[in-house]
Image 1 (tube, helix red, strand yellow):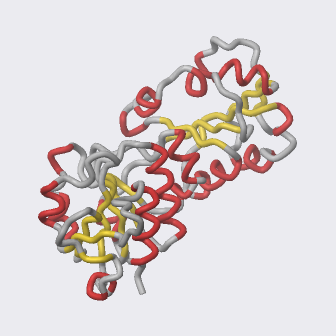
Image 2 (cartoon, one colour):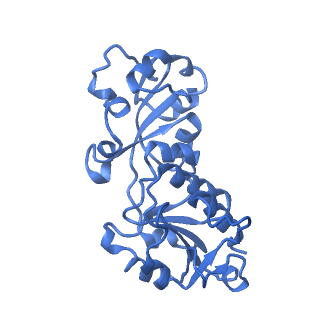
Length: 275
């Protein structure tokens, strides 16, 4: 039996997760390892549930209870389902719910790098990428173009922030991922050493006079390859580039020197996919 709760008091602390907590506060709402994230839309919530994420509460327009969210509500058991019409929800959250449904969920624990990389051949490493839109788009490309897993350096954007989850279209729950190191001192070294011990060759996606093209036959033939992508402004750290097995770039026309990191990731993932 659904636990439907009509919103009558905007100040209720039960609504804080949807209306008043920042992304940082959500991550540390209970304990750092037991934080909260928000999934938006029935499709994304469904993928999160498929991945084993545990729901806490739902917020939705009244019309969705017997409509598009009916199956989601059934899957979530007896958790609270807070509801009101769209104008009241926009007043509460500060934005209009274009997809109608939000779900607060417990953050899953980080698996180890070894667990995530077991049996993989192609992995993306995101070094200090801070833009949530780019992170979400990279995950979507990874899911679509044959990347087996994603590793994030300690200073990389949180993939479970609301915008990254939304832009990824829920693929964040389909592609295995974890942090490679718990603090900045653990990347680039010893993180790169860990990749080598697990049998991966590394390729830095970077502009360099010595870079090979991404269609280089030897690079494409590597059995296990970690594709390392750098931050939006400065690119990869010099240490990272210097210690990779390869540096590769995408051939360009019309004197264009580079692509946005999300666009570059899609090109690299497709060209370097396992064969």
